[in-house]
Length: 269
Image (cartoon, rainbow, N blue to C red):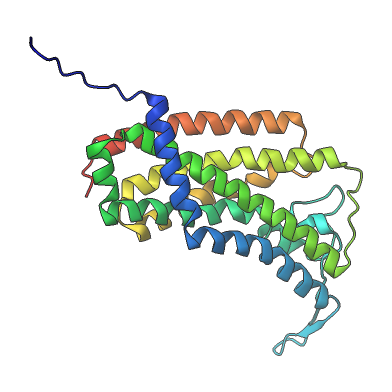
């Protein structure tokens, strides 16, 4: 009697579960992740407290003699966005650029170094050879980056509240409500998927060249960075959340497919 060799099929769900388990374990054991989360938490605290302490200080231009009075922040939520009628608040110029939206760029550092390390160490080549498919790899890295980005956004939000409380700033929402604040954060979290998909594509194209991945990701992210405050304002509603979720899903699917093609058509070393 002839014995038959039966090859066990490895379904997508099983492959994906294994890939995600490995990637999430590696990510949560990475010191870089905790450095970025700690930075996200402490940055708004230090920035808010220091600017509040400098409120009213005068600087003099030695050439012209012109005096400039430093205006500190007046409201805790300036760390998240511009309040209705809050354009004239102190520290507005600083908080227009240095606010929670910086986390969209910070996650690029994690993704670029995470993926470049896979190719530099030979882990990716071994992974694709023995078990994982390239599409699974892209999905896993996208989900890991999305989760890490969401954690950074939440950490920045907590840091903003702490900084506002320490500096004694107002928590007045200027006509908005807690629902708008929640929708704003939720919209930003879903929008993170757009940026993560871009960073994953650039990183798999750059492979082991971390410097190239970082330059490309930061440059590509800056093209969308200025639109984040318009897409996810403090007065966000359910419509903003739906649009960000739909945009995130479309970018993840579209750029994920492109990332897979890039991996299929290029060398893994």
